[in-house]
Length: 218
Image (cartoon, rainbow, N blue to C red; front, side, top):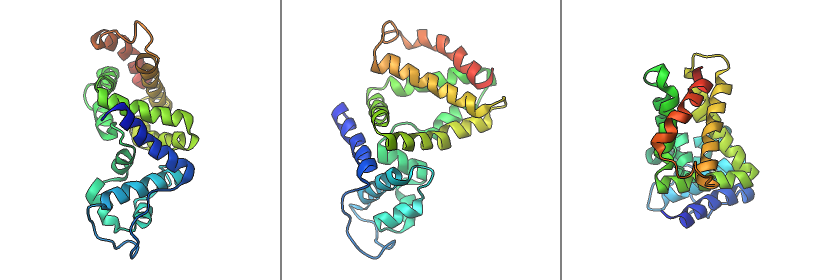
């Protein structure tokens, strides 16, 4: 996947946020259209529209199924859960369950390092990085896209991490940690500030990890 394709994919979501429109689907009895070659794409188109119109928190799998005119069971068949459908609709590489597992599993003293290594593992891969940057750029220029991403991050990333932290103000701590990661993305991968942009990952990990550790459980 190239950068142009990434940008085009994210523009599709941003345009849905502005127009609340998706490509036409074949009309039939609502909720009963069987799966077929185009069904997956119809579901994704309906998901982009519903998420953009109502936000992540207020969009249900049942509502997406009605919009796509398919049985709700097909959404679970193709995508599993709402967060997985959201990620597929945005073509977003972050897997929140994997991130949460990495952060909260294991020795408490290594939380910060595990988080920063997860971030670098995602961002040092060119294809994943371009998807992340495309989504962040869209969120920076489109308020509905920003609201959509905030709802997803709050419900699927910050919330579960905060719930697992045995520390005061866990929501605030988790959000501060996420802002540190976003700052890293901006400085290293968007603005390409030197020497941050060219510094080896193994040099940056021990510098960043203590700050994330302090935010989360310090």
